[in-house]
Length: 171
Ligand SMILES: [Fe+2]
Image (tube, rainbow, N blue to C red; front, side):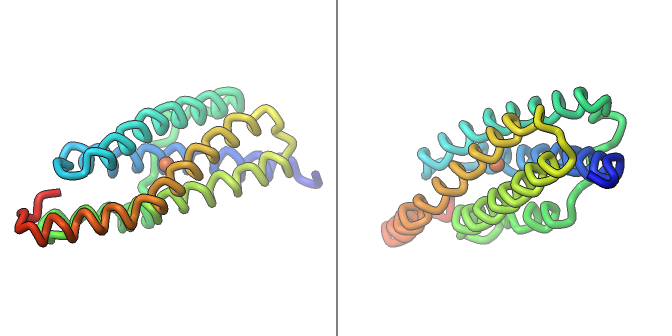
């Protein structure tokens, strides 16, 4: 590569952003799980993905250490996109479970794009040690996005059925 140091900087910044992104993911998913009562399969999958996300954060921290960059040296920046997503979690409206399903699907696809981009930078910059960890994270995001996609019809039908049955707006 013509300028390895510039590519290295892009890579390190990208890893730090991914670290912030995953922490944001935790702060979005954890409150959701705690509120769910009527959608146990959604709660179960979210709990599983929270554990996966904690593993992803550990992988990113390990990569940053290998690059002699401490993740704590730089405070995680809140991404405007994720902030907007978090703000979408309206708890007042009765269709919270649907809005969260849309937001989670959007967020997982954002993460997928981030890891695909990081894999490209790793390739360009010659950081083959990072490929396996980034592939693992990408795979987990793709699995989660697919699950949300597959589950959207089920969630919507359950939401409608509960409403028909006169259930309250509980999540
Ligand atoms: Fe994710």
